[in-house]
Amino acid sequence: MKTILKVFASYKMFIVLILGFASGLPLALTGGTLQAWMKSENISLGTIGLFSLVGLPYSLKFVWSPIMDRYVPPLFGRRRGWIFLTQIGLIGSIIVMGMCDPKVSLQNIAIFALFVSFFSASQDIAIDAYRTEAVPEEELGAAASIYIMGYRIAMLVSGGVALGLAEKLPWSTVYYIMAGCMAVGLIASVFGPEPIVNEAAPTSIADAVYKPFVEFFSRKGAIEMLIFILIYKLDVAFAMAFTTPFMMDLGFTKLEIAAVLKGAGLIATIVGTLTGGALMLKWSMKKSLWIFGIVQGISGLTFYLLAHAGHNYPLMWASIIIENICSGLGTAAFSAFMMSICDKRYTATQYALLTSFMALTRILVQAPSGFLQERVGWEWYFIISILIAIPGLLLLTRFDKWQVHHQEKKTA
Image (tube, rainbow, N blue to C red; front, side, top):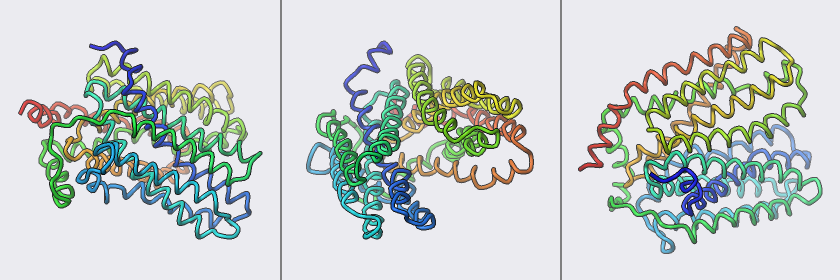
């Protein structure tokens, strides 16, 4: 068994860290940072709202993911080759976005923002497949935590740092700088080791499209696993769905909220995911999912206590830090679990499908939860968020059944 320090300090984990950074950087450039740019140019709020549609490729990436399982680019191999191509596309699209002027060519910005989203979603497909295949199963939790740390740091760069730069520099220059930061990801695609996969890749695009579905749904408990993926983090999504309105209701200022959420919250999430990844080097997947699932569920008590106490600044800090640490623990185990159940012949397609399905959790929560809060108030709202953790934990009692297929395949 490798020591924890040796695993986290390995060259492979360094590559995963860079890939996490490359994956997280483009998101704000078509989201919050782009909104700030358009707002500074006095673009109407209605138009700014419509630009959220450029993020659709992130939800539809499973549509073209079979192409990345089937075909091998001419450079760097099956996984690194696609990462390299999508990063080149991202750098070019971000640069061209920076050349546009929202007051003159809003349509062009929309087009190239869509290109950024498409290449970013495509990069995610390739990177998810890469880290799933390149890392031994016992190190998947560590890889997930390192990846998330890189992702979060990148979001801070393309979000907070970019906005700070925009106070002194033209927006075009800010986007050029972000394109330069994106080039860091090329280190991983050029110098990272190509995963060694013994299973044969699909031989036709038809096989790449339907065989991932056939393989997954032939497993014992396939439907149960999908339901588990949908609800394991439901309690966290529910508890944190309206964090900002909740804090504002308690009388905290926007500056206070931003400092805690963007500062302490970010650090706490990184600490939680890294701790989760380290513990998973010693614990089994099942044990990690159980313990972290219980912890992330119970952590909702901190928000309940804050709702009961009212305007309490120290408790506000404590609730955000504890919730984000516990959520980070669960995320490390959850990401590792999804990576572990992918068949390496179809990693890109199956992981894209699983993450697209997981994204439904946020939609299912945000739609009705506002109406529920208006009926029951904040204290009962957070009590309900704790109880929502129970179904996911009950499904974990089926974990051994889900692993039968996986173990049979490993020993075949």
